[in-house]
Image 1 (cartoon, rainbow, N blue to C red):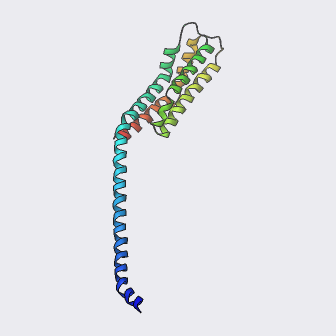
Image 2 (image 1 turned 180 degrees about the vertical axis):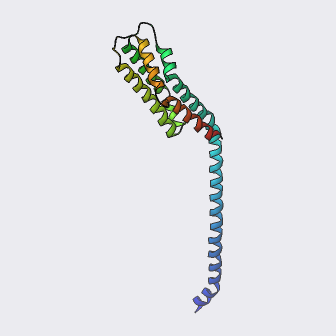
Image 3 (image 1 turned 90 degrees about the vertical axis):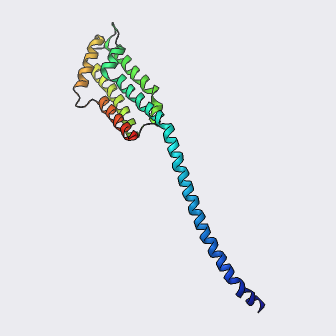
Length: 177
């Protein structure tokens, strides 16, 4: 009997306590979640400010890479008098691979789509060089190979190097704007 009497007086207090506990818990959980999301947004904003110059440099370096492997620039830079077409072919492909390896880390800062365009441009240039070289004898002068490469690239509907550069520029504008 005494137990029921005690329960009669304490039960409303327990119900009020539990109700207050759960309501306060929900309020505090909501505040903690809002604070967490606010801190996360602030951190992303800070990271974005720090990454923007690095990302811009990555786009710049990838455009420079693409310009350097474009036929006209590559041939002017790599051609030397007295080279055979085979030696020139080897030299051109080696230059493309070295340039590419030098810029591999830039894929961290550009989108997968842009990176795929860059890789495709590199592979297309190697293919154009090899296809052009296969049409010549290996001991023909390098000037013939250079001319054939430039003509082959001109005959493409949209040269892949220019397409990749356009993709990079468009993506950079979207990221900055």
